[in-house]
Length: 88
Image (cartoon, rainbow, N blue to C red; front, side, top):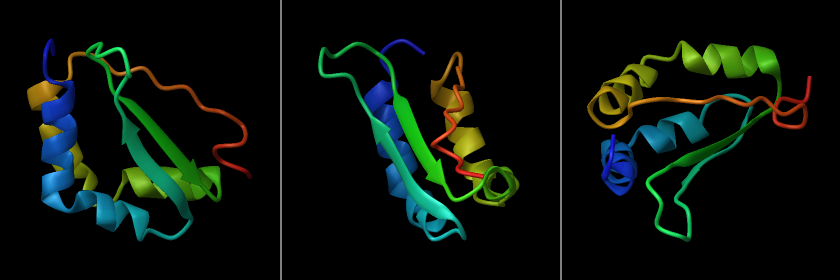
């Protein structure tokens, strides 16, 4: 939603869910980035050991916390899967 990028990232960080995600089996990285030009967008770069572990990550209870925060701040989500992001 317009004007909410930084607030979204702040709220996610405040919940402690990032630490839980980063502790998951196969997680090789999970970080949010904001554009240097100040545009209202958020980039999530998630690296995982395998596609299966990434799919298991999506089913973790703490992902419900992220979903609730997204509902308050995010209008749309675009997902791009890179081969090197999930290596097998």
